[in-house]
Length: 412
Image (tube, rainbow, N blue to C red; front, side, top):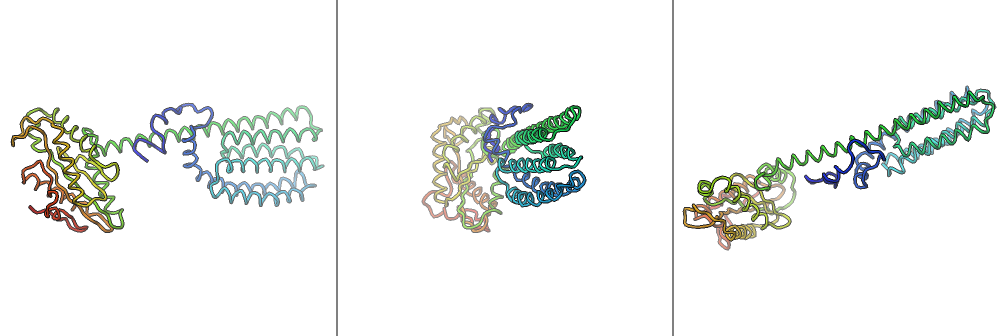
């Protein structure tokens, strides 16, 4: 996850989603997939455990069948026994976090089967209290709200139960108009209120998720800013310490690592002559040159502090690091940034570069590596500045190689 994206979506894409209103309860495809990926496992676990609760409640309602439709109690028991393996298979699949359409459709189908079983008992019973089975449908509708079935699945389930309810009324007969109207109002009201509650809950959940994504994106941006030098745009020393710290504890096996420490020659004279504003412009130009000379992969540049920069080179030995340091030095000199107060007679800004490298097994001696590069930088300054130390092609280069446990300060 980068500092500019959350789950593959940037700030512009997230801001395009309405914050206050989400009438269709749908995100853009990428965000919808991310939403399901993050919330799906928890939803599956929730349905799994509540599924057991629903199954227990289904069997508990045998007591109601015994009193309301005692003449078909045996059939009611067979229905329970027949539904049990179906529910168990459903719970097994849900436990393994299936796609949302499978997970939620299972729930709706089971609810319709349960509703159908109660209506079947009512229609084939001759008990005078059989119409009481209609009240079970209201309980099923409320159970969908408790299960927090997504709105469109709940809508399909409620419409299915509503259709079964009306299909059962026609052959039932014997109900007074007042009873029909009352039952219709109670059942229809339960359906409408259930759907409103489900809609509001899902909308609030999705908007909360969207808000959390925006907060995460903001946090990532703040973290990125805290690890970035505001003047040059390079990573700062904090970022360097975090990366090196991670390498110290998180690497295994052999690793080649090199560091270039870069210092702008006589930068104090430059600042005193042209002012700090021009000094900032100079540092930005140098940082841009450093960035342009890096490889696409394996190189990272940091502003180490003041007029010092550091380049971290992954997978390179010391000669290769020295070559890159020389390339950077030449590029900065070739940029011909005027230096009107250079005390040695040069007329352009130059840099001195210290190089150090190591081959580490099962860990990185980060502090030793940086210290060796800093010592090499000191030697570059002591030997006249505007150069890379150790020099290319000389035996002294071997003196800036760091062991995995000890820092070897380069000799003169």
